[in-house]
Image (cartoon, rainbow over all chains, first blue to last red):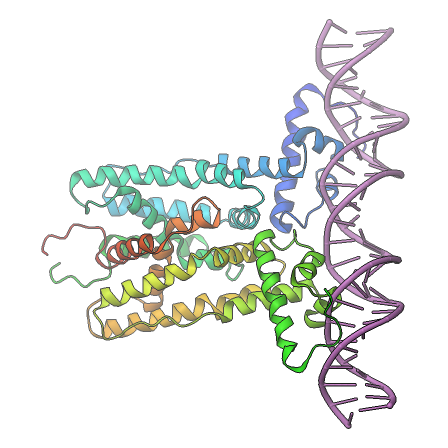
Length: 208
Length: 208
DNA sequence: ACTAAACGGTAACGAACATTACCGTTTAGT
DNA sequence: ACTAAACGGTAATGTTCGTTACCGTTTAGT
């Protein structure tokens, strides 16, 4: 790179983001232990010293990355007034689409593998990401219970079960790299079938 | 170690197992990339050369370990003649107990993180472990469908949903190290509530 | 008894890697 | 204009690690 020297005023955030972007992609491809700082620096067209100035060390860079990934969380809207099945199905589609993106799958798997080394990071990730979705969903179920449409079970339990059903075994296979990323059409079927099973159960009802 | 030289006839398998046991525990504690061959050798009271003779290299040792972990799979009995809810609950307890053991949780998380480096290993693990459980469960649902008690949905879909519901969000937290291993009492409640929700759904039925 | 195989222990080799240091350069702040 | 800060590039440092080699020892197989 020809460009060198102290960056201009407006460009401070720029190299910072470029660095995070490059590091992100490389961590996703190689995991934590199998990626060298030099590779990151070269890919981001940044000097090694800059990384250490901005993030302290490798763990700091990894942490910043996880945190940025969690911050990308946007609360999925749950329409409280729509029919419950429709509201849940719409939520399910959005949730499944996000959660099946290859980079989300990968970052999750990497964090799982390294969580004993970064226990605080695991907590941050969960509380800023999955936990907020669960709370949001539990609130939805709680309101639906007040209408009497659904059984009075702990709404947090319901939220956890719904999320877990949504992920399904296919999510495990995705994390193991045994399956391709689903497209929109597959996700829609996936969301509908799972939501119905969750709502109506398995038993054949005697009366419709 | 004082003991040295070519091992006696009956002791061949012994050091092999001792090696796998030690390696197993160390991999669980440290993950793949953060564990040195020398540490394994010392812990197993075995020379480095012996490891390389028996397993080729580090990846080979890790693979043998994963395979042994999968082979420990024992088909959980599903009583086809018992009432369905009872059969499923019994299965659920056993499944949850096994799947929440710390070493099983850890080996899974490590394999997830390293799966891009060991794609074949991920396949072997899944097919010898989870897949056999799923097939077994799908067969159970298929037979139950013939009795007409449950809706006619793809039994493999039902099996996947049941397993996935069983794991629940708590399983994710376990993998992230955010929760303690559940004891038998917790597992029983967990199994019962999940099974009931799976069978009867969320909707308040008009007629009991 | 003799050879080959397998072992434990130590050391060595070579590569990779996280981290730091140094140098010349460009911009910010005053 | 001058100093301090931040940069890119290269090199160095110190460590760790996977793997191999060598040596003396013990057992298997014949």
